Image 1 (cartoon, rainbow, N blue to C red):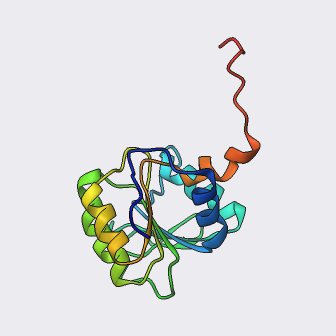
Image 2 (spheres, rainbow, N blue to C red; image 1 turned 120 degrees about the vertical axis):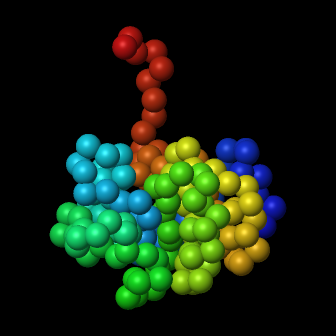
Length: 152
């Protein structure tokens, strides 16, 4: 799919279709540190039923939450539907190349992770792309209505 303007909000249908269609998610930049946002997202997505694959090249890191950690996307031993990226925006292009190489269907850049060239590369290869969004938040958005009238 091409022609998506990633500077505009994604449609709810686009995001929900992705989250409903993917089963296996490789999380690049997964952390074993329970205080890190990536750990919380990994936990919630795993508990929601996704087959989560942590990807982190740290030597000696064998598992996160009982899930086997892989050092690279290429090392993963099964098909991956979505690659979720908890890295700097500058790293997204390289991750996009790796996601294409393993046959992923979706490249998802976490909040703050944006690279238009990486998006174009992935889309030209047939991947759907989401950037600057959190799948954990999007997963529950249809059921969550903010109450802006409440005092903080």
